[in-house]
Length: 153
Image (cartoon, rainbow, N blue to C red; front, side, top):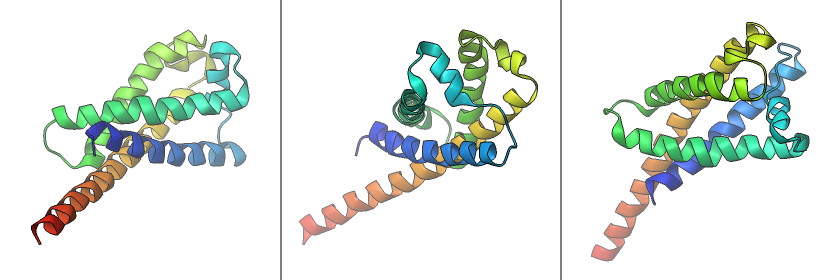
């Protein structure tokens, strides 16, 4: 299985995890910060389209990039690589995405909780991404070994 495919699978899982947490935080009234609404501001794509975009970015973009990141970073537990990756993705979001949607660098126009909430979500995303990537990688290796053993017998 290609490394990028493993990243996409892990990215989808990690995006599911943070999406559930985002919905839970909003339902509990713990945050008024809503990334999906900000995504909608990019092109008035509507709420469903913004959720789709959220999953495309988390799955196809960040998942595939993490696969490359995994190959070029020193050997370390993947959850740790995921945390570092999450911080990098958070910084990029704070410095590029937030100004583009009109809330300033680090979302300053939304208050202090916006960057703090986003850092928390990106750390969770990164850890989930790294852990899921490790599981998918181990599963793929086990399949290769099993096939090799079948061909030897």
